[in-house]
Image (cartoon, rainbow, N blue to C red; front, side, top):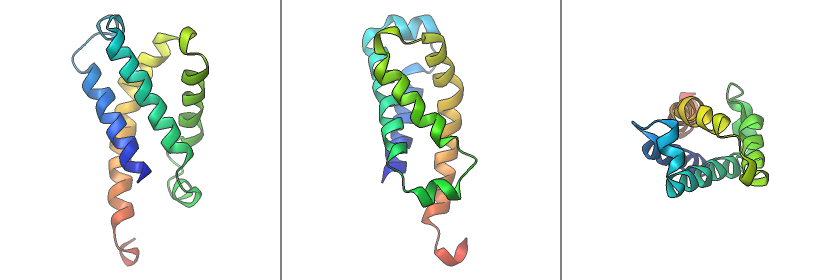
Length: 113
């Protein structure tokens, strides 16, 4: 399911950046590439989530998330690393937590909602 893809990509980004500074993360070309790839995975997965699921969880900025993927994909060589770092350190952990909650809610029996 796409939610699992998002959660896995978030976990990888968090793991690739845990305990490191912005300079340390972005000085490592493979680490940066991994982070950008997983941002791309998140954005692609969001674009393919069912509309009704997104509508049930309007507190998640789905459009903004999908737009970041376009930003990263089209401006790869001119990516603003400060924006990426803010996304990595603030937005991705928040999204990972929110996606975990959504997955729990979505796997409940329909009568349990």
